Length: 288
Ligand SMILES: NC(=O)c1ccc[n+]([C@@H]2O[C@H](COP(=O)([O-])OP(=O)(O)OC[C@H]3O[C@@H](n4cnc5c(N)ncnc54)[C@H](OP(=O)(O)O)[C@@H]3O)[C@@H](O)[C@H]2O)c1
Image (cartoon, rainbow, N blue to C red; front, side, top):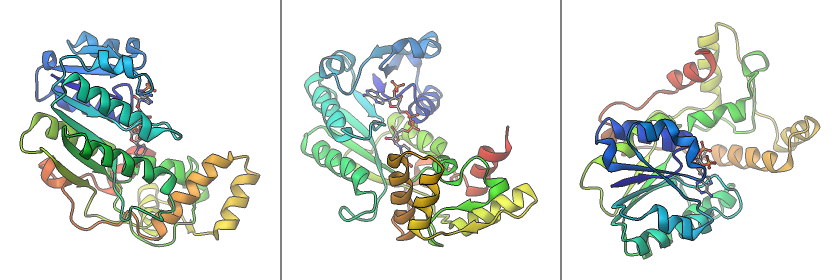
C-alpha cells in the first residue's frame, strides 16, 4: 500500500491522480489533516486517513499497513524539519519499507540567501538517510508555478519588478514533479537514490519578460531594482515583512545561480520532455 501525504495540496493531489493511472485505487491511501477534504478521492476507492505532521500519534495511526510513504514536504515556515522528522520516525515505527521525500534543489548546503528554508531540507535529508529506512529523495526544482508570486498578477500591465538580475534558472512545472513522483512510486529501482528534478531549459527574468511579451502581443518589460529599492516599494505597498524577506531571499538565490541546472533526472523519470517555460506561462497567465 502506498500512502500519499499532502493529498489536499497541489503536488500531493496531482501525484495521486498520476498514480491512480498506474496502480489500482485499492493499493493507495491518502492522508490529510482534515480527511473530509478528500471525499472525492475516497469515492474513487482510495483509503483516506487522518494525520498531521505535528501529531506523532496521528501519524502512527495513518501509517498502519503502509509499505511506501510519499512525504510531501510541509508548507510550515517555522518547524518544517521537525514535522518531517516526526513523520520519518512514525514511518519507521510503523514498519514502512520505503520513504519517498520531496526535497528541494540547491547548489550549496550553507550560506544560501534562502538558508532559512534550505536548512530544513538539509536537516530532513540527513535524518532520513540516518533512519535506516530505504529512501528516495526527489530534489524538486523551483516551481514555475510559484512565479506569479514574484511577478504579480498585473505583470502584463506593469512589467516585471524583481531584483533577480539576468541569471538563468531551471524552473519546473509542479505537474511534472507530480508525474515523476508517481512514476517513482509505481516503479522499481529507485531505492536509496537522490534525483535532481530540474529542467535543462534555463531562463532569466529577461527571457520571462520576452515570453510574456510574445504571448500577450504587447511589451512586458523587466526592471531589476536595487534590493533596497525593492524592499522599500514592497513595504510602501503594505506587503508583510515575512513575505518581503521571502521574495528578496529567492531573488538573491536566483541572482547567484542557486537554481541554474545542467543535466537532470527529470526527463528520464518522466519518459517525455519536461514542460517548457512558455507553456507554463501560457497556462498561468493566458488560460482563464
Ligand atoms: N520547489 C518549489 O518551488 C516549492 C514551492 C512551493 C512549495 N514547495 C514545497 O512543496 C510542497 C508541496 O507544494 P504544494 O504546492 O502542493 O503546496 P500546498 O498546495 O500548500 O500543499 C501543502 C500540503 O501539505 C499539507 N500539510 C501542511 N502542513 C501539514 C501538517 N502539519 N500535517 C500534514 N499535512 C500538512 C497541506 O495539508 P492541509 O490541506 O491540511 O493544509 C497540503 O496538503 C510545499 O508544502 C512546500 O514544502 C516547493
